[in-house]
Image: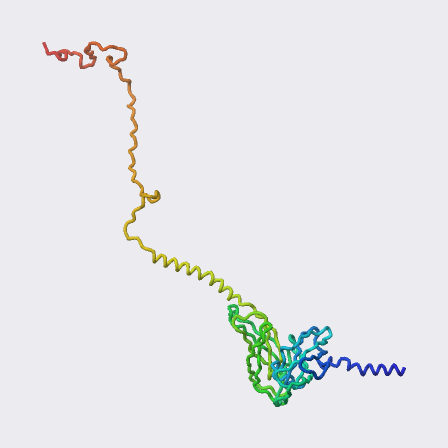
Amino acid sequence: MRRLVVLVLAALLLLPLAHPAAADGPAVRLSAAQAGTGGSVTVHGTGWRPRTLLMLLVCGRATPSRGVIGGTNSCANADGRAVTTDARGAFAKKLPVAEPPVPCPCVVHVATVTGTPAQADAVLDVAGHPVAPLPAEPSGGALSILSDTRLTGSGSPLTWFGAPPGRTLVFTAGNLGTTPVKDPVFQVGTAHGVFAPEWDDRQWHGTLAPGKKAQIELPVELSAGAHGDYTVSLKHDGKLLAEQPWGVGRPWGVTLFWVLLCLVVPAALFRAGMAVVDRVRPRRPAGPRTPRLSSPRHRSPRLRVPHPAPRARTSPPPGPPATALPWFAPGTAPGPRSAPHDDSPTSRTTPGTTPTGKGPT
């Protein structure tokens, strides 16, 4: 029974030590605290988000309490390594030891590449590398992001024709220092794909008292015609505070403009060329145009005089048939001509008259 109680107590005492990073956040440890250039150390990490891409770097002018002064410009970026955490948020990766571009004190700096920013440092003594004291820590406030950043706003219709896209970066910052922070200057960076970000200074006008927070809005603008996947980063006092992805649509209006230009310009040049040809070609002298007789289509029509209609033969009016003369009767021979016998009333004699041709006796 006593042994059972001892085992239970021992398990309870060792339980908090089994996952020390679960309550304290991400943590890293090294297989060796000192190594020379050309060697390597194994970096072990726990407490990270599962399936998260991390970057491992050897950095100078850094301590776990103050972080890396100067950002990644103080690190040996060419000899860095990337690793992905497992389902439990742990990893183990061998890292070559290289001299950073600035003097030590040095650390192995581990930070997330995408998603919510998280980082952790482990002290490393690079043998043979110069050591210099760190710059004095400025007295004043310390700003920190208290909520997730977001991009608000929508593009104007002009962005469809290639105008610079713009958004507003909104976040809540708090002053964790002991003195007020007045008119802080932030660095806003925009990176396209895997390229390094381009930083611009953005000043927020206001004062943050110690222990207070405020919602800050900073404008973000890309270059004209920008499209694709971008990442917006936020820094203050050399420390990376947040990253936010931004997908920018393609300006289809520019494509439509070029298509119309390729159709209109050739048509305009063709019409201009035809107008020049029409002006340059020789003109015929003014005057009546004579039709060409070589082509039947251009012959002048002949004047045709209408012929008079043939007269219709008129038949004699109906009447008694004419009596044929005896000497014209067919089959008869001509003979002596006898005097005709006149039976008309005028030929008759009346009392007191004589026949025609004779006088009175």
